[in-house]
Length: 501
View 1 (cartoon, helix red, strand yellow):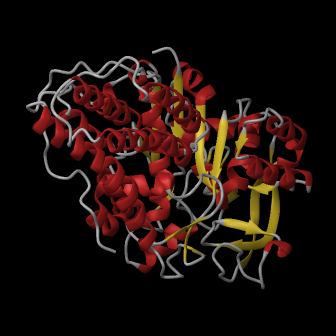
View 2: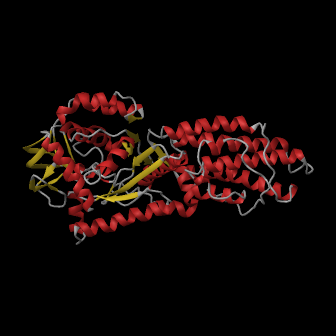
């Protein structure tokens, strides 16, 4: 392994439970991590839970629990959801861990020592659900623009971060070109900075559920200036400088657009204040909407992963959220669209290709796989599709990557339709077409493994190949002509049984 790749999800707030909006972000990060492992890179994939703040403290009190008990219960639900979806994270961080308190203390102390933190009194409009202050012009009909709830007026003595001092450095960071993507989201960040930055409050005295400010223990850090630092904690900040220096230059954050300001303005500025480099890249996607509305407990429109996995399986769930909506804009979810995508792409295309090839090999070749042709008409299709697939995953565009991979499946099915080997007598021509289709399936199993790991592992097994597709390495594994032939093909049950709407 020569390259490192560090990818993170947001850490999810423990006042919510895992729904498909959380799963959408997490599955994208997981699939990208799996792709980079196929490239033989040293990958570190982080997710976790954000557990401090006023909202957690109040919710725990309402339930008759301590904040830690409340956090423990909800954090466990996120772990269970990610295990269900076969998320391959290398670490699961909780902001109540000791290692995180060490990192927060070290990074914020560095910013303080560098003269970027001062004390003042703050009075402002505060949304408890967001754990964020708003200016009057930010409100919509007097309500929080995200949660559509009334805000509170809070006044207290706080420590402030001198955010206003970082306008020029942030703009220079954006100009690197790919620091914030897609371009539209980068333009939003630029717009926030060009409007003028106000210094921001980073501590609280009104609550105790948080990490104490090291130079003033009567204060705890405001939850965002605790939570954001998790990305540095997980790779050794404050405890293992060598490890941090090795991983941090490769960090890629995957976030939703509602936390763009925190990740593309506040977070890089705090890192700069502490003498650290800003993130390598922040990838920002839109909302996953239900009937045009963002999912929330107040809207009562949340859908939970387990409900859909019951109908579509883990791979059906993963494939839909990776393939259906382009990364970047908002996307609408509907059950009907999920059924159509599953039946069209998985059952009719991939599943049908595997089934018909295995069946015909059984009937025409005695169940023994023929090898592909070196000059197959599918060879240039695969070469082109691999390039487009790799380009899609490289820019966090799973829908583009999967569309390119499925091109191989469609062309292999078209080759079979044209040759109709099921009607022909056994012989070299039948062997040639079937060998080509088996090789196409081998390559698709590798390229689709980040999206549908269970199904592609099963394809690999039915083709009589050793190991798993996830253990292969690209680009070598995508080169045409490596299927050896001679294996006994297992027909098996339908890989993706059709679902009735």
